[in-house]
Image (tube, rainbow, N blue to C red):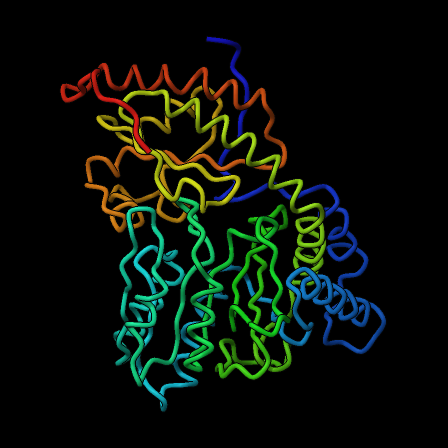
Length: 396
């Protein structure tokens, strides 16, 4: 085995803050520290910076600046979209539609709404994690007030048919929310188009090389939604609290960079991903999780039979390779991934999962190193298992 190196392949969990983003933020942590609600000059500087970032975000999303609201991140955005819409529309009904593969920032608020008298339908997905738009339409009721389906899954990378689901939602005049935390800089978005796909969209800066603790919720003009934070008049009186100016500036710069040369960036990611995929599928008794084609260009998720994901993760870490066994927010749990269970994997196979997500600083040398190290680690772990049968083969 070659010389140990450091390889970060967990970009779906978080990304580093790009130098250009850090430089844009720095003045608002030092000399331009004023409260944007203040009337004096350093306060006005902060206010101008917030609105400039709002313009950057709106441009990247193909939205109007008035439809962009800054939050503390994807979790807050998801909570606001679900709770705010449900409470604003409860006189029209109490039925919500979602899926069992959503991030917990969607699933847990939906579970909470059930304790508040709302009824939630969790649509099944197929073995690739795809939602069937026909099943969305079949689940609609007279009292349905919200549909929430993620744009692409954070664990298995499957891209959902959001345009088709959006068309159904639009025809039935039901708002559609999508958790798009994983797709910024990977899928082009255009909120202004006539055949709108979504009414609300959540995003989080630290997933596309911006700072942590800042995100946004796109709310299409005319969407019924209650305020989530009460207090001051910030964010057009919809989300109270003194603005995180430096974070907002960082978010604006990060999303501006993320949507530059999007197609070329995706192609580079896909080339590395496909080479990594081909190499890993040569390991016996492994399977690719998620759709083989309708998936994010940077995402791979595998299950290795007869081994445990945590052991695999620790041994990879010893070799300098950072990756995941599922979503970052679930890493403290020993339970099998809810996403892998939803696509039909039995617990013993779901437990042996590995997620590799590529990013801007990964190289062909990183791919070579992982393909050198991973098969040997899998082989060592399986040598300890009394259940492994060497004649098993890979499958997609």
